[in-house]
Image 1 (cartoon, rainbow, N blue to C red):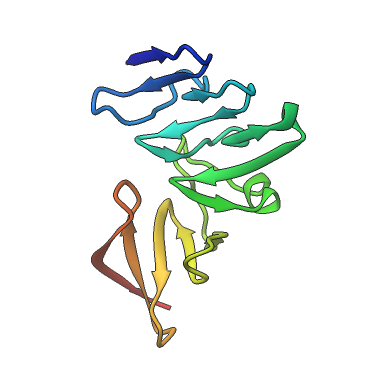
Image 2: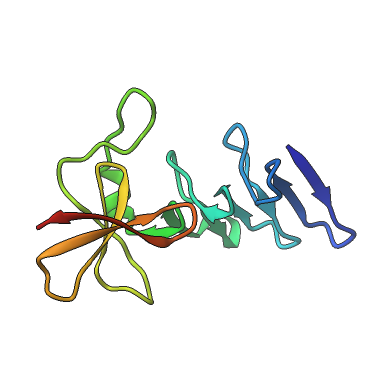
Amino acid sequence: MIKNSFPNGQEETYNDDGLLHSFDDCPAKINPKGEKFWYKNGFLHRLNGPASVKNNGSEITFWLEGFKVSENVFNNLSFDLDGNISSENPIPVIDKFFSRIFIFKGLVYTIERDFQEAVLIDSFSHSEKHKKIKL
């Protein structure tokens, strides 16, 4: 774990790879306004609460592996014994660039244009993989 404190009051925590990363459920980034952000390997992510807390807690957003999810979706998630997301139903993701992204059994997928297959996205690099599932 690498901690940095800046003259403006900002604090950041990094993993050994130099990516913003939260440890022990502490925010990886606290800016001078007191806004808090939780990260996992460089992506906004938190399993037990909002990953972004602004305006003294009045503005919160939920993120999983760098993808924004609604509070309702987040509050209905279930987890396996290892703390991984466990769901038999796809979890819709809010994303301004992709409208057809979802999380299924702990993996992130994007739906192909023909709506017949979904392509696995590597959640750590957000790049497409070749594994596909039939819808």
